[in-house]
Length: 354
Image (cartoon, rainbow, N blue to C red; front, side, top):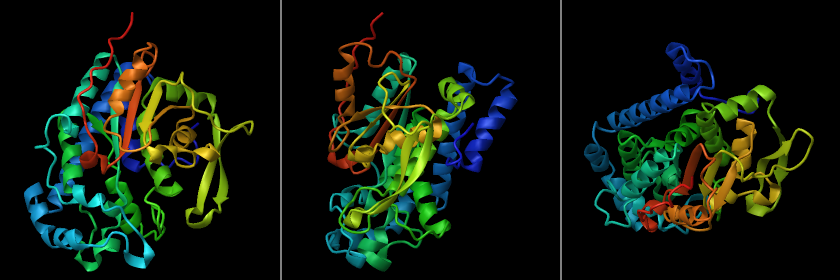
């Protein structure tokens, strides 16, 4: 049974149900999971292409329309924004770029991600790339006021990278679109991020992201088997009351009331920075939120700071053997400013052991 807290988008639910029907394949077969992956990549690519059409028909036209916003962004005081909010000045760098294509080797995200994707594919492992939007990308009007475009969508370089990755058969999750929709289309006034001095996301932002990751994991037999047995987890409402970090949290508990725990035996490895570890002291961090909807535990590879170097850590762990052999998917999450602020080396993973 799918967790009642999970709200699959109508498009995703439609894909999960109809693609399997049209293919005539029984649920849980590896062939169906592969076809669903291909369909997901196609749908994501079409959505990104629609964003381009909505902003002038090309990335060049979109960037040109953002000239007044970018001029204001260069002069903005990120530490003293609207309503007492503060933002990271490093967010500016990504938002001023049209693309990331001309970065040197070792600092090119596209090159590094495709190299990692191909190596994982050779091992039968899917890579799912999930950039977490920077606070400024969702709230540019809090930094530059009326100089921000009406729809607040300003992430040209990040969206261009996501599109290039889908064209190279790398699976991505676009969080920019649902985050903007939550703020503007749904007219929900609650911020996705903390309102004052913290640039990390609120529990709500993490939950929006975890729902979309769980949607992707529904195609795997292990998740379907877990759902058929009955979800291991339930969400318990909790109010975090510690100053400006006060937030409504879903504590993740097992059905017998125990705290959630990551499992190194999980077929799903989520890699991440401090955003993935948020609420870890409550055992309700990123992997816990995904597990709440998927119905089985994940494993977490955590590293503080910017995260383009994740494949280095993945290779180091893999030296001992057994770290990747049982995985079905690596979910690569990172804060988007890492695209400009972090190194992005091409890392060769250790050869799988027989």
